[in-house]
Image 1 (cartoon, one colour):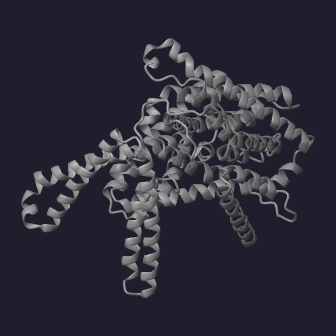
Image 2 (spheres, rainbow, N blue to C red; image 1 turned 90 degrees about the horizontal axis):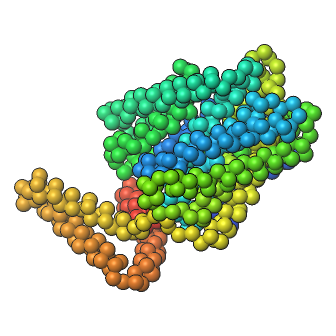
Image 3 (tube, rainbow, N blue to C red; image 1 turned 60 degrees about the vertical axis):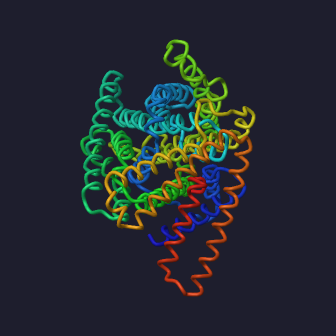
Length: 536
């Protein structure tokens, strides 16, 4: 046990070094992770690590799905619900069907149920991979919203397909009518359990005297509670996690009322998701030798060949599906035509961004080793190898070429959207006006006797004047964009020098460490106003 733990920690350290290298050469880190997972399998003397497939499914999938739901914009999700639904449900089922029949015809001894099992595994693209590749690139906000919304729902729909196919392989029985009815029952009741459970967690956050640490710990526990609660009643734990995550995200402004709670929770989740992504690819590296040795009649080259063909199929099906989804509704409905046309560039980018990732890998690893009759699960190792090849091809090939396609298309914003700095200025004005109104209506007597409140009111009024002047100058000055960039650069340099000064103060021991940390946190928040979540 100690040796296994030391091995995983060492490999994680190596993976983190690779991630830092990826950031240095400006390549998305999921691409390096899949390469690292492959490289680990070739290291001589690396022991084979065997884990219970159900444990892998339980540990990794609930938090990854919950995190995706939490950071999904509900407004964007609802605005593009038609396109998201057609991709998340329609594309998943079409991909599963095509992969099922293709793999049955391609692989000797592969049944249709096993084909649907493979289709359910490789059908959902990974949001983390796509958004990581797209970070820093000029892509429309609509594109990001659709990719994030799609990945949220298609994980759920593909995992339900996987579960039904898994049951069909194990029992040898499958009925389309029964499966369709069970699908809606299991998915619908999963949503009910998820929303009900999320309400209970919401009440704990809202009305009990929690601390930032307790709130963060509860958010980590929530996806497991929702998943296990739904699975206990034989409903969809995946739909429970997704629906519960959306509900908690929508009510988060009522739950987490302090900045430190939100900052703490964001740090916890960004670290957790990063480590889980790294761990899954480490695990596949440790299991690959055992998977290859257990291929049976199939050779490694055959498995790679099958994986390459399936990769081409899933890429082609996505590209063929995305253009009708983008344009056919516009031909049918006048209401849809009111939105700006996506043209050919946006569907191309969304179609090419269908990179498979950690959810597919964790799902493949969760296939049981033995069936109910204590026989080995048929072609389990081959399915995992094919999955890894599909992930490798889509991540490395599509991930490395996606920036080139974006540069080639030179796509701009499709929908009329205010620049971020203009939105921030308008938000500040509304919040400051609310503060002035509250002071004038409820605390007028306090303003007359409390100089601190009076000074606060004056500072807010000055801020309103400054923000309005800023917005007016944006409308009149064509060079304002360069001025703003220069201003941000100067401010970031000033913040950097101020941090150095704080370090000197700490060495001089004139001020307490607590006060220096408070000043440093204030600098962090000021920097965050400029950088947003760019470096998070």
